[in-house]
Image (cartoon, rainbow, N blue to C red):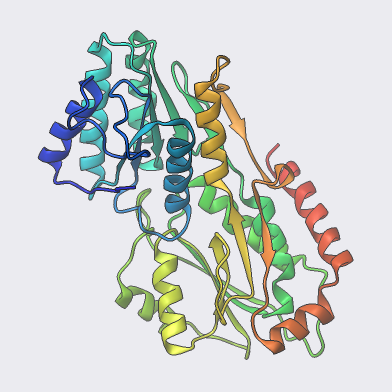
Length: 361
């Protein structure tokens, strides 16, 4: 797999060559087989939020799902991780202009995995209707596109509710960090965790009063998903912890990797793994989102005669989100064994499913 970040001018030229060419030379960004793949093989192009790839979480999982489909079905892929929103919009503008005029029969799927481009997609997706061999998949939104294109939404409320409900096993002093308050999946996750934490049925010996502090990293729709180490250090250093057991819950994309690295470097606090399971002495449970499975499923639907449904929702009840408990130290293993029985965890899980269904109505 090659994930390439180009300068804007070079990127636009390469994209145009890839999308229009039917030759073997220079049109394959990802080659799943040592033998040459025909230039007419279906092409999947993904456009991410600025600097999103490499987050060791959500966006990397999307990339993995796409490349797994490429290996399985012999697809060509191109992964575009722009440096700025404007650069990403330039990619999209070029793609839409090119596809509106193309006359070939190469099957193409464009996956847009970024809320930053929501307005552009909703205003321009009809331009793809003139190309019957081109389709669009937008991740994630609960509002279907009008006109051409499919959408997927993976509610995080239930899984985060479950995570919040089991948190008192480990800590009652929590810092909940969100990327920004303008992305619904983030705000839903923040709300789910808060509701579960405050309603938790778990009571430990000598349990202090619960303390939940919420912080936002940005007030822009594309902001907060990447931050400098100095910003992360400042946030952690300025946190006024009230108890002895401190926990960080970072719902902020790639920024979570910065927090994790600093916590592990200086042995600060514990944290909750977000989007994928994290193996660490400072992480005893993770909230997982199987976006890689969802992407693979959508690509398989796209390749099928029936095509992709207009809109799909994959949540906690469907097994596409969940909580994985993996206590690392002997003390954490003892605490989880003492205060979170299998029966109690299952009851919390079922309550989280019920709460998510209620929340999403």
